[in-house]
Image (cartoon, rainbow, N blue to C red; front, side, top):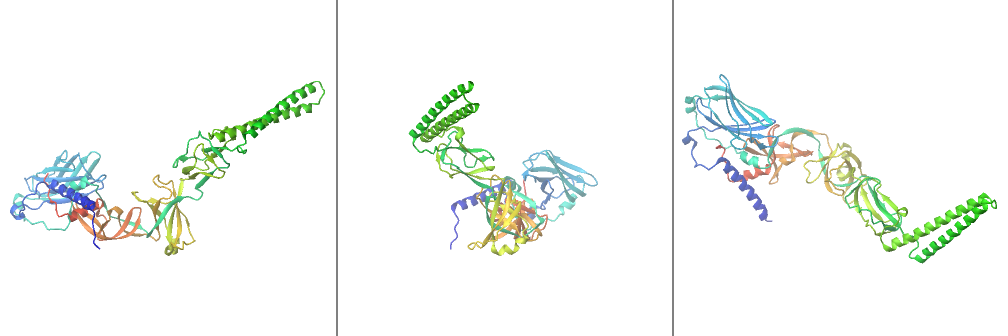
Length: 521
């Protein structure tokens, strides 16, 4: 089989390689002609890198000589953003028999302070670099240094810098890319299993709203769109039921006429009885009976007219029947409308589903636990949800259940966790990964997942050994949790690991253009 690479992939790789090369060339300026260090007669510069919790210091300077000026190229990086310091004061302090301080009030370019240091006397001094910037004050102790006499400096042996095999990646490149480092730390983690899973409604968290009668949906209510939020008790729809008399309008009109005639007779009888009662010809009981008969006749007229009006509303298809004959459908729970088949003014049959509502206060994460892992169910110690596009895993609240009926085809059982108040970016039915922890915790060096780079099938990390120098270290991956992964290999606690932008370092290692180690600022 012949491996191929698309033109777009080559184009993206070429552009990034060009960016790295141009950044390196811009940092060091024009490339001077190759010279032998012995011919130049100058020893290599001192290079120091220090980190605090607030800033990273990378400094280059020639050996200090009494009465001579040494140019310090000081690079300060704000570790809260990994951006260069664009303002502030940088000071170089020599403390000893005679204290001296040399400072500049602004960087010459973002992140780079050029300080001229002219020691007044030879001897041993303590070297400190102090930063005073808006919102960031820091101090880096570089330990003891020796200020040479002129004679000692002249006799200083010139040695050629040995190739250390590190990968150069200049500060100017780091500052312009999405780049960050962090110290390797030891954490306890348990063994975990990653399971295919899906987000489903919780038990009792889904309901279908159906029509209790056949009729027509009222037309004046706003439509409930899919995805809209509803609260328990909200009106979803109103149904004007069918009259129950089909299309027999003449029969309904006859009923109205007969009811009105009966009402007229009842009112006349009531008036006659009341006169006879007044003169004592009839007992009072007959007056009460006549009054009730008239009221019943009035009710029959109202019912007959309502039936006729209901038939007319149904026949016209307007969905505007009187409110006193409507059936009101209300939301039985708080949630979102997952499905809606309700169209204002449309006819519906009895039992038809109009809405499906899903509660989102709690959802279930349903994973497929392999048959081979059933023996470890009692050792489960928590779980987390991994979602593509999320920066970090989502901790799950509690284990709801582990199934005991095996899927004969997939050879798995369901395992269900509950998640309260899910992120709005999560959706019912979404495919996710469920990581369950299935062993006691072990302690090991831990780095973020983003620090791991697949280098031709070998997982590697890149260690910052100096401000602009990095090393490739092959590692083996272990347990994972909360976006972190345990690794074993040649990594010590506290070493600075590239956690953002590691692919850039790998690309720099592949580039034939090697940036110069010195700076001209």
